[in-house]
Length: 161
Image (cartoon, rainbow, N blue to C red; front, top):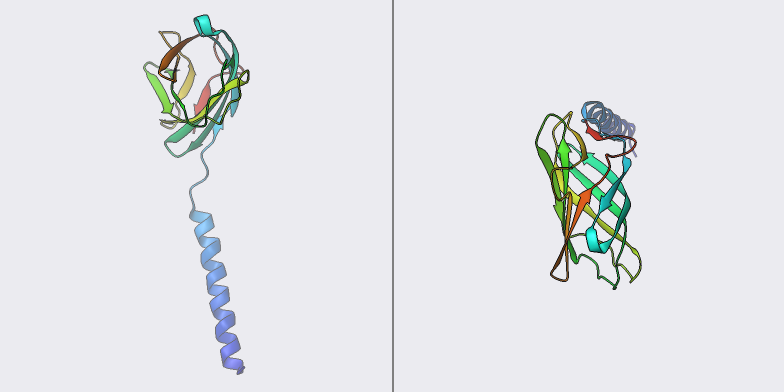
C-alpha cells in the first residue's frame, strides 16, 4: 500500500473516532427514576391481597412499570393474556395510568406478574399509590379484578427525571 493511502485511512479512522466521541458528548443523558423498585400493598377483595413489588423504568417521557403481586393465579395464564391498568397518584394532583396486556406465562399457583405497563411521565413527576378508587384493574379470561391500594409505596414515590 502506498504511504499516502495509509495516511488517508488513518485520517478517516481518526475522523470517525472524533465524530463518535463528539456524538457521545452531546447525547442526552439516560433518564432515571428513583427509586427503581418500590413495594406497596393492595387488597383485591375475593382474589386476595398483600405486598406487591413495582419496578419502574424511564426513557424520556415514556415510562414502564412491572408489578409482581402477592396475589396468586388459581389457574395457568398464558403470556400476554392479562389486560391491566395501574393508576398512580401524581403529587400535586391528578393521576398517571400505566396500561398494557403484557405478562409472562404464569403457571397455576404462581404470583401474578404484570408488565411492563406503559405510561407517560413528565420531568419531576412524583407518583405514589392511588387511594381514590381502584388502583390496579386486571381483566383475565374476561373476569375483571379490581385492587385497592392500602399503603403508600416504600421506600417512597417514584420520582422521574
